[in-house]
Every structure is written in C-alpha cells, then in structure tokens.
Length: 435
Length: 63
Image (cartoon, rainbow over the protein chains, first blue to last red):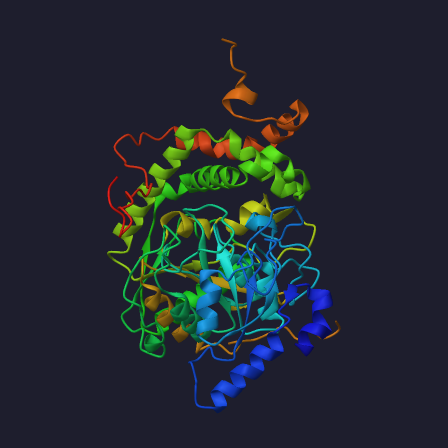
C-alpha cells in the first residue's frame, strides 16, 4: 500500500483502493495463524479491472458517463475472496474495454509510453510492483496486450472456462476473463481458483476442475510447437522478431519439436473480429446511444460505439462463418502440434500520443498493430498466454505468445514455466527510480 | 406508406448528418476489410453462433 501511495500518482494504475484492504490482510493473517490456511491465494493482494463488479468499491468500466452498475461481487471476485485473496483495489482500463492505451495510466518501464489496454491498469500495477496479480478481460487482446507491453504474464483462457457474470460486457462471444501476473506459477494458481461453472454466464462450461499447477516443472521434451509463419510473423519490429526467434531456439533446446505451418484464411480475420465486436458493442450500448449518454464517452470510444450500426446482418453472419472456418483450420493444425508460438505484439510500447508507428518500411496505426497478433485467438476461443521474452534496445518489454487447443491451458503453463525458468528476468519489475 | 430513409430508418442512426459523415470516414478502413470477407463463398459453412434451447425451470409445471 505504501508503494502504491508513493508511486501511483505517476503511474495512475488504480482508480480506487479497497477501504477494507488492511482489515482483509489482518483477517487473513489471523486465519492463517489459527491454522485455517485456505491455499496459495490466502492473504495475497490482487487488483481487479474496473469492469468487474465489486460489493465494496464502485464500478465505472473506465467511464465517467452516467451508466450505473450493481454493487455486488462478480463471479470471479467471489471466487478469489473464497480462496482468501485480498481484493486490494480497482485498476484503470480503456473506457468500456474499447481501446489499447488506457489513458491516463503510464507504463512503469518508461512513463512516457503507454501500458497498452484495455487492461492497462492491471498490467502497470504488476510491472510497478504494486501487486503480484490482477484480473483483466480480453476481447481482442486486452489481457495479453498490456501483459506484453508491461512485461507481465497474461492469460486469456478458453472461451467459457472462466465465468463472466458481473463483468460489464463488451462483445459477448469474444469476451474472456483472466489474470495478469508476475510469474507463470501465479497465473496457474489464480486460473485454478477462477475455473468453475457460472450459471449466470450463458457461455460458461461445466467441466471437471483442472489441475494446472501439478504440470509446472515437468519436462517439455517432445512437445510440438507450431510456428504459424503467415500473419503472426508479418511486419515485426526488428528487436521483437529477433527476441522471438531466440525464444523459439531456446524452446527447441529444451527438447521441443518445431513445426512450421500456415493458415491463409487469417487474411480475413480482421474483418470478422471488427464485424462481431462492433455490432455486439453497439447492441450493448444501444440504450445509451438512444438516450444520449454516449455523448459523454471519450471520442474514440463514442465513434466505435456509433459505427457498429454500419455492420449489416449478413456481414455479421459472414464473420461468424469465417470464424468457423478458422476454428476448423486451427483444429487441423492442432492435430500436429501442441502449442503455437509467436510474438504477442509486433511492437513494444509506443509513446503516449503516438497515433501510428513505423514498422519496417510501412506506417501502421497503433490500434491496428497492437491487436493483430492477439485477436485471432479470441475469434476461435482457444487459450492464449503472453509471457515476457526480454527487452528491446530501449529497455521496453517484449511479449511472447503461446496458444493451445481448447481447454489445454495446462500445456501453456507447462511450456511457459519451463521457458521462464531459463530466463534471468523472471518476475522482474520496473525500478521506478526517479519517480 | 412513407419510403424509409436508409440512415435513420434502415440503419437506425439518429445522429446529425455531419456526424454520420465523420463516422463513415472512420468506418472506411474497416469496410475495406469487410469487402474482402464479402468475396468469400461460405454458403456451406454454418456460422459459429451458439444456440441452446433453455430447458423448463425445475419445479415449475407446464401451464
């Protein structure tokens, strides 16, 4: 709490701290002292993104508009509290999860740069060493993008594995809840706590609770890693490309078999996610549009919410057809590989205010660049994890992304943990010197 | 019956014309991507829309 008091005036990762945080910690300490240890999350401070409902703190979804939300705990927050975690506060987010910058939050590795988004406050809070873990939500990359730019671990689980009731919706069939953490093991522990059927989330699945943590530390020899050379390796910043190739070599040295493949239909993926995300978002915000509440939204978000009306029903359904095509393409690819490996983003954190970046010989908007390697996994609903794989020449973190078949999070954790164990930056946090 | 207006009636947009123009400009790049999607012949592909009929709530009799 002292570190937050000292540094968060500059980082701006939190929008609210729990008034009961210290009392929760004292209660947890007493429970543990009395022998009532609830497990690895007992007494651990965890922050939650501002789109998760909380009973003891307001929910604003990053917006100053007059949309109101219940003061009850979301399904995920309930599960974390049951596991003994201390819900320390709410983190800043790009308004309504519709963007990848999260103003006014800054990146702790260099406060002139963005933390990414939309779960940017969660990524920044971990990178600054305020908390070891935070919850985020991911519709096109909103957990993995800030994880990649802030040098944390971030998991988008399989669609339906983690219940979303009590989270402000953005796009029902693309939204995922999951953790950002300092280490792979932390992500495994938290995901285990979050899994379970959520009867108030129609997308929730009812499956046997998996054991992710038992796989940590086991050999990855013989694991087949897939490198999708089209799309995921197109137009990367030089440092990003080099660090990712180094990581692939390291995985090979750990005994993984490298298999290259291509999925040409990824060329149509951007159209599909835009059609689905825009139409869904506009449907959710329809009442706010009709009543003029959207006039109080930030201009970029207001525009996105308004233009969803241009997506026609046939375009939307064609996007859903393309989605099935991609699901089948990757199902075929996953018959020959266990985990797809590639960069999380084609770039590192851009400067606050930059609207476009130069990658290779071309200029690209930061919005387009930031999510083009993450959204394919939202379209097909498979689990995807971002883990740090070093730093660029300016000292900014680079993200490495793993994706696996549905409900194979265990393979992501196993591979990421084996890779992380070989790196000297495991759990590294920004120094914040000079702030 | 009055002929419906494309913007206000068909698309359900009740914004000022200049705002609609701004939004169309913002949508241009996305529309270019969607135009590519429209070229695909996907007639044999079932869309990935999840639909499950909701069973009768337990404990309630049919009317």
